[in-house]
Image 1 (spheres, rainbow, N blue to C red):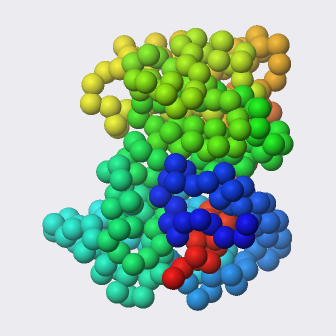
Image 2: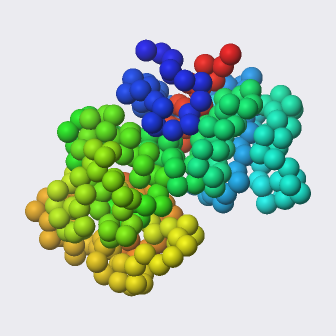
Image 3: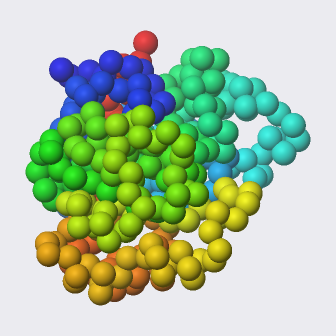
Amino acid sequence: MSQLSTRHLLGIKNLTPEDIHLILETAANFKEVINRPIKKVPSLRDITIANVFFENSTRTRLSFELAEKRLSADVINFSSSNSSVKKGESLVDTVNNILSMKVDMVVMRHSSPGAPHFLSRNVNANIVNAGDGTHEHPTQALLDSFSIQEKLGDLAGKKVAIIGDILHSRVALSNIFCLKKLGAEVMVCGPITLLPKHIESLGVKVELDVKKALQWCDVANVLRIQLERQQIKYFPSLREYSLYYGINKKLLEQLDKEIVIMHPGPINRGVELASDVAGSEHSIILEQVQNGVAVRMAVLYLLAGSRN
């Protein structure tokens, strides 16, 4: 297989296992490229890509922009905070105006779940979902799987615990889809108020005790508490959350094995993850950031090959 089964990356749910393997294999090749003295390749020099972000972002936006430039694409960046969206312009009109400038691909982050899917049905361009509300964040899941594979080998049979605010996390949902399609076992862990109802229907284990989750897993993917998405209080205080679900070095030293620690960022140090863990030999957090560029290069390259 040398081509994706879709012309958009809207979510992991829409991908086949073959699509995922192709993206990860392509990312491995691009990781070699970005570690060379000359880090650019001319693969997309005839492509123009618009990064259309309706939500704040640091890592994802910079990672996509760097991936695009490493592929020699022309890049334009759009931010809703200083655009005509503030004057009432619709999403479709905004993007169509951008596309009329001969833009070929759109990387979009939006606060509304399903916004990239809606856009893909209404504009003529490849759409990449860079995060839509609490729904999906496909490239984060792909880079997480790539990072685990790089560290531990084939994901089939590996045990991955996703710990933290599962209810509000698009990273959690995309990771569950991706890891399950690659044959991994998945557990979610957090306060019961931060676990979606019927989460077991996705084929994951559920654990409320973080110590048991850490003892079970090979990899712990730790998520932050997304206070900006919470309309009510789901637990008494951050201090209490940290006391019961925060991961520190003392907790890891009590395990009878070594595990890998991951985090999609940004980290709330001292809440879900202590600094002595984030910077420890267990952590592959910075590797995730580096791998994000290679994975996004792979996604853009493969989608460009599917253009009509």
